Length: 116
Length: 113
Image (tube, rainbow over all chains, first blue to last red; front, side, top):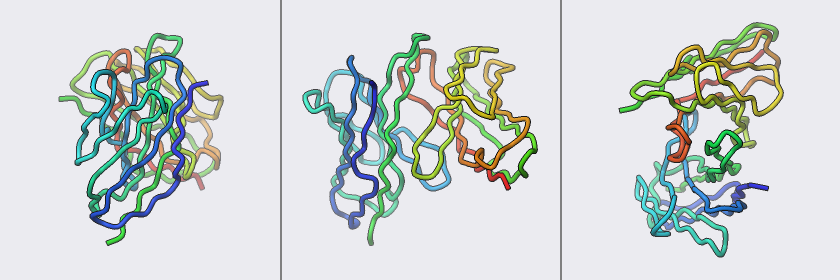
């Protein structure tokens, strides 16, 4: 079955520290992978996506993610966290549905808190 | 550029009252449209998606319905709200095929009292 697992429900880091949010997926074909960020009370914003090619993808706000097929992972990283990065982060995999459209399968999210 | 509008931002409704949430997309044609509900600690639940006018697919049985009367308009409705309908509702769109991810509206916080 197709699924996305974000093992960390909540993470706290200090401002300026590095960050890695984990995402593992289960999908039989080549995955389309996404990371979204959600600030409190807001909609979701796309941070970055991977379809093919270079396994290290760059996104907005200084984030990057690395696709590792052997580990079925797509971890999100940032070298130096800012207080404004405190938010909920969602990983998703695009799976084909019966209507020949891709449907996103979502992880449950990781809540990031940033200490000053 | 494409934009998505969702309203209202917040809504407090009594149990048993009707519901209508509206979502419109600008700057694109024939988008795929989606309604999600987000409950605290439970991630995103896909409620409905639509690939064209009048074409609605329901993902979960529930008290809600959706309609797409125009190409870029997606409406979420209920005839009688339940307490369990409370949550954060998100509308999203994607290009045909959905390959490039979704763009989300800013959401509606619905509280049923």
